[in-house]
Image (cartoon, rainbow, N blue to C red):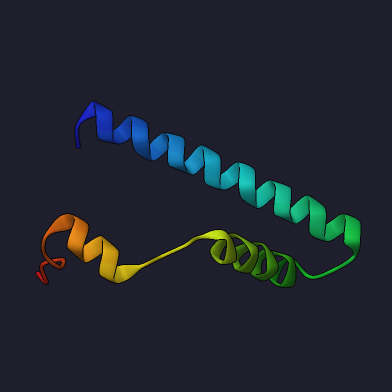
Length: 67
């Protein structure tokens, strides 16, 4: 791996760890299972996304290649 890839991977792990710790804290404060709080957070995030697969295909000119 290159140094740039290592830096990106390290940054992703730091963000993931921070998000996980925040969710764990929120679950503990609410007295709820971490799984439930995490699922709700993921659902809330995904509901904010506006994904239009047809527009993405048109924008890229073709669909993703299958390896």
